[in-house]
Image 1 (tube, rainbow, N blue to C red):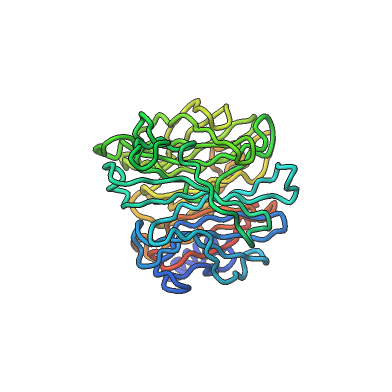
Image 2: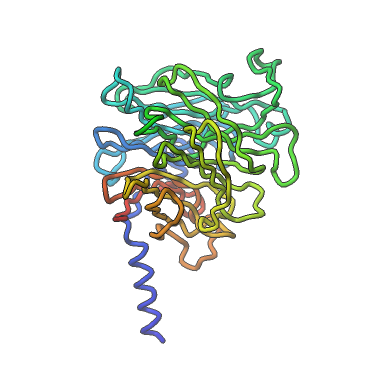
Length: 387
């Protein structure tokens, strides 16, 4: 029995160690912030990686003095620079960083980085009650993230708050309240009819708080002119759909993958669009992608046989935030044939051991994973050879 147990342990270890070492990127209590949460990552045309997250100055809470911070790696994630603050909203909240590299603007042949984010002036629970406001913004970098533009407020284009007392432009009839970009990267269509479209997955609450969080619903917004104007998608037909992520499929389609805030079904909500994310053809639960009411990350990493290859990462456990798992689909997300355990607690009972994550393509055979580890004590990076 002892020999069998050792063999099983070694087998599990080999599954996990498909990854390179776990490299700390943001460590709570260091570099001016007591906590770091909500990772996002993109790769640049010069092969640099930019890792973003929320730097929470005074503690781990979702509201308060929260900045958006960034680090850079020029060696595939093995080492990282010192922290750079990109957005500082004074004593208020700046969060949900959603970076994307625009690669189709002829004025910027080396690419231009958009960083979408939200600001807020009250706790999410109070905003849901109508006692606060969340806004949507972006910044741009034209020099690979070394410097950033002044912030641009796009709230009136992508949000529908009924708050004319704060700004006449916010006098909408829908009464959207809480609002959040996808945790993780935004996306851009690289091929086909919608090539160049930047799409940001998002969610909002509408009207007074409802039992089971059914006032939440997922949506998205997009630009076809490199940030000059933005358009809203329709909302997803799934009350309780929340934090979302999106990726390009074959044949001009888009997939959005959402958290089920209701928690009645412990699996991810999938919505498919044939209009580039403007409207939704179908919405369903993917029972393979089990989820403990948490965030997930979706990324297009290639194409095979006319279908897009997708990577999806989340805490693949129906009860707790643990067992961070990378899955690969060779058929536009219909099935998930390859599975890699990235990290999990040793005894399987450690609460919130692995939580939010984001993915970046490192090459034809490797994917980078930036994720929250060990009860939010740090955000680490690892690379996975998946092919």
